[in-house]
Amino acid sequence: MLGLILVVGLVATFTSDNVQEFRKHSNGNAVYEWAVVTPCPTGMRQSGFALAPTGAIMLKQVNRDGTVGDVCVPE
Image (cartoon, rainbow, N blue to C red; front, side, top):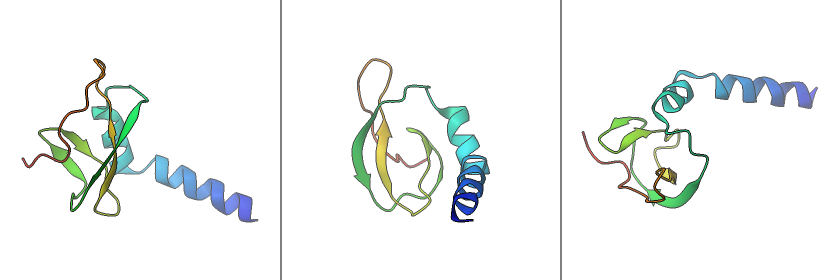
């Protein structure tokens, strides 16, 4: 029963509107760097789409050229 609840929770999380929006704006690179930024609400920024369900960013996706840009730049 616990396994079923876990699977349903994961499916609900990964199909949420915010996660789908993040995937749409993602560069497809599965490499991330630690970049703790608070406060940062979820939404589109100049620096990309911020997925921050807790109001904070913990990881920043690395660019294709290996650089890490600014995090949660205001609109």
